Image (cartoon, rainbow, N blue to C red; front, side, top):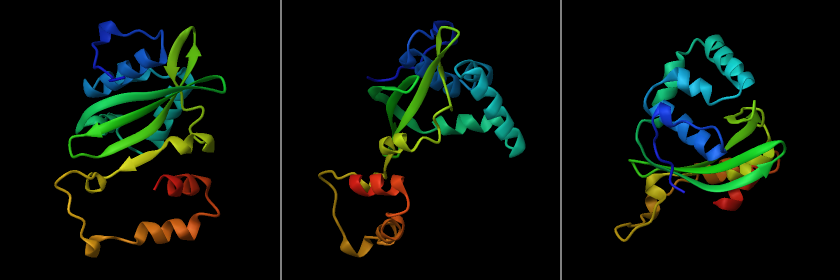
Length: 171
């Protein structure tokens, strides 16, 4: 399902999908107040505190959507006390990223939450495809350009980190 950009007046929090569309739209329109409205109260406090402690302007969040071409929700999963949307973003430079976005109900509205941010169970949904890894009819493979750094890093840490095992299985 493609995520469409909406106006603030169109915002509904009746489904995780509509909340996600509002959150992305708030970033694209650079509306920080609207952005915070899409999150749980606890996540807003945590987010503001982290940015303040790091001395980072919260408006830097808007940079995360610059260069986006399309966003798709590719799966929806019940998870603990909430819902996880698996989201795939396509950037203008060809990069494709996939990751989980988590939601819970707060005051009868679906809101983005950071509550599950450190859950290793969600790491399996992370993926990143660089533009040069996308094969097309014009792709020419040059073995002298292959880089073994990732292979060596995976091999070195595969036993101690669950997310690296998940990444290695996908690669």
